[in-house]
Length: 185
Image 1 (tube, helix red, strand yellow):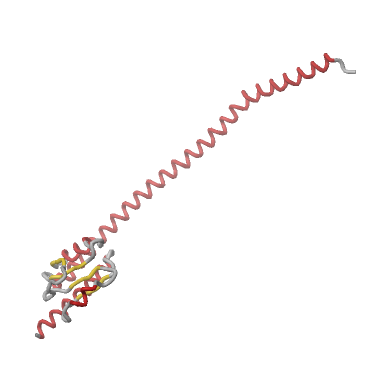
Image 2 (cartoon, rainbow, N blue to C red):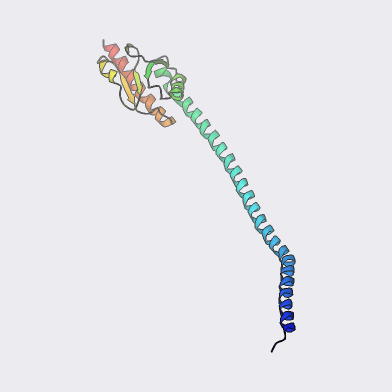
């Protein structure tokens, strides 16, 4: 039979081994765990720094591209002004648009080619210029205009130089038709 003293000694030995293991594991394992944490943190910081650098480079590139686009738009507007200077200089164009439509950028293009832009009010006479309607749908009062009135319905305000150029071509055609009708009469 096993004596109680041996049993007690074996329990003390097990618990002391457990205590020594916890003590050694806590002191020896902690630097190893901290080393792993430091490596992971260093890799994450490096990835963050690369992403931040890439983001800044992309912002600079976007800024350069936007400047180039603005410069190209200015050049196109200048070309439009040169192209239409003789035909549209001093001409009048009436514009109508609902309040929610922003017409300012295109109105600046019309002014830059030498046109006079007049806001159309229902009932105004259209003897000296065409009417540009900037609306998704034609307004009801349009049917009440005289038959000889020249007008052009534009569903969206042109937002690119190509569309602006196309609209100027159409305005030029309307003005030419109006001049020809005036000469005939």
